Length: 288
Image (cartoon, rainbow, N blue to C red; front, side, top):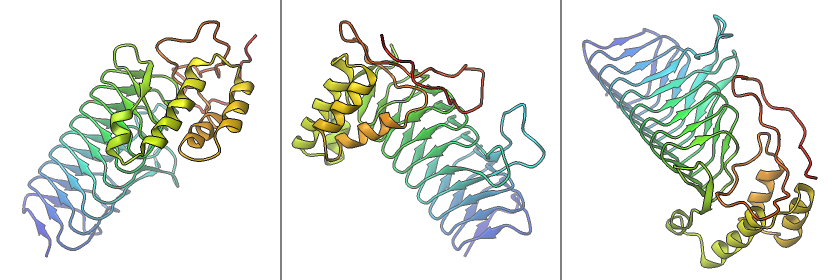
């Protein structure tokens, strides 16, 4: 049995699963789907084209599926698809995709804390935490089990790797490798997210393997091709191979260590202009 407060405004074509609760003064626009057992709190707004799975909790004042904050947004925009079991706290804003046929996507079992913002065309995986006031620009990808601390901000098209930990007030302008910790003061990598890995059940052998890969990536000073070749030679199984695959597919370069090695030779990928919202497609700048 659905419970809809009499002051809520719910369009006639909204699709509601069973046991949905919609609080006072909430606004649910047309062409919205709300899965079973979702709770939509007072003054929340679900815009046209928003799809929620099951067991989501949307707190007071959140706005889901809003129009992208983009100068080139047309009258027709994309959608927002949210998975199952997410907690979306007060005044969170998650925008729809920029183009029709595309969708901003939030996976399952994420915690998105108060006042966080997820821009158009972002992809957030499963079991992530976005703490208060986190800001994701357009097209950012946050992989499973990543943790972004309060007021961290990510530039468009950046990726935040799985099981990484991003410190509070970090400004992320390149990709964050899986399994690492970024210091909020310097916005640089300071080591592995060892505590998080242990909590997630990584074995001592797996963590030791990641430590070896970490030293190779952040402390060896190898040039780009040599680094990839050495990683491929040294590591043939997960989780270290996931770091190699991440490096092979980076488009914005990766966040470097706080203490770079002496005579560092690893090449950086060129980072796109921070005012440009087009995908970076530039080649690697070679060392030497």
